[in-house]
Length: 203
Image 1 (cartoon, rainbow, N blue to C red):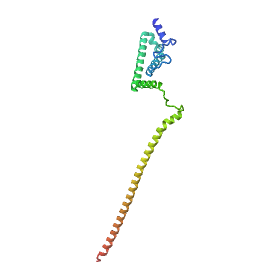
Image 2: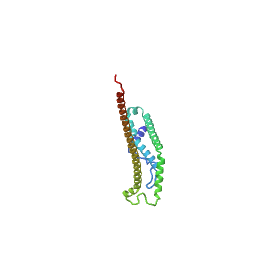
Image 3: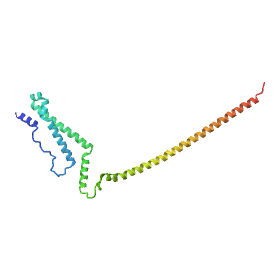
Image 4: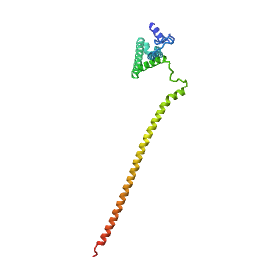
């Protein structure tokens, strides 16, 4: 009967929920790293609650009837390994993304901003105007850079075009010279034939 009571308590959805270890009083600042850890703990608590022992035994009724103590140990082991696996994967993600350093840096920026008295990034209070004032110099700089690049490329293209035109003129001149030499050779050949015909002694 004691085991049945234990099972009933584990499966009772109306049991009072324990307060989260990361809960803080209103107005208290909590670090983002601690907030992330609290969210993970809350997620695991809800995950275990969703997969209660009662639901687990419903899937293995026959085995639970034969070995109730063994079923309880298997469930406890399964929940423990599941939580450890999830925590391990989240830790690897935090290490790969360097989340703790990033979140701590964000906390530092927020804390430093609380004591700042000068105007914020939007001193005028009009987002459109402040956005234009912040981005306009950048876009103007990019425009000038692109314009300079285009002018440089156009000059380079003009040089290439001039080189192509000069090459075409050279090809034309070479063709003219070849044609002139060909015509001169043909004229010389005809003169040789005519001279040979004149010098030929008739029999």
